[in-house]
Length: 255
Image 1 (cartoon, rainbow, N blue to C red):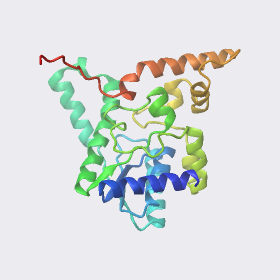
Image 2: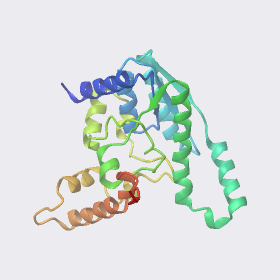
Image 3: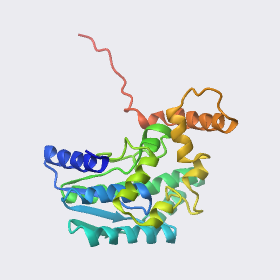
C-alpha cells in the first residue's frame, strides 16, 4: 500500500471509529496544506477547505484560492470557504496596545496570534459540522524543530503527514498532481508582513534540517553541516515545550 493510500485509509478509519462527519483544513497556499487537503478530499467525506487571510501576501492568497478551486473542481465532497480575518486581527492588535500598553505588543507574539485566530476559526467550523481540524505539519516542523505556533497551527485533532519529511511531502504533491506554483513556492508560515520564508527564519533549508535529524552524530561533518546541526539542536531544545505533553505536577496525597 503506497503512502497516499495509507494516509487516506488512516483518516477514514479514524473518522469511522469516532463517528465523525467532516474534515476541516486551513489552506494557506503552501505545499503542506495543499497535500493534506487533497488527501482529505480523497476520503469522500465532506471536507471544508478554508482560506483565512490576515494581512496576507497577495501571491499567497491567490495560490490558496487557486488550490481550493482545484479541489472543488475535482472533488464534489469539498466545500471551499473564505473568511478574511484582517479586520478582526487589526481590532485585537489595537485593543492590546490601547488597553495593555506597548510593552505587550511583541511582533512575534502578534505573529503567533494570527495563527491562533485561524485555529479558532477552524474549530468554529469543525464543531458546527461535527468534524475535526486536520493538521498540516510535517515531521521536520512538528517533531524536529518545533516550527509551528503552540495552540495555533499546532492546535489540531489529527496529523496525517506528521511522519513525513518535507522531501516526502514534495514527492506526494507531485504524485497528487498539485499546481506547480505551489510546489515551486518557497515555504513560509504566512505570519509576517515582510514575506519572510521558513528558510529565512530557520537559517537552514528543510533538506538540511532533514539531514540533521537523520545524522545527529555525523563523522567529519563539513563546516556548513556542523552549523546546521547547531541550528537544528537549538530549535529542537528550545521548542520541546511544544513537542512534549503538558507537564503535570503530580501531588503526593495523604492516604
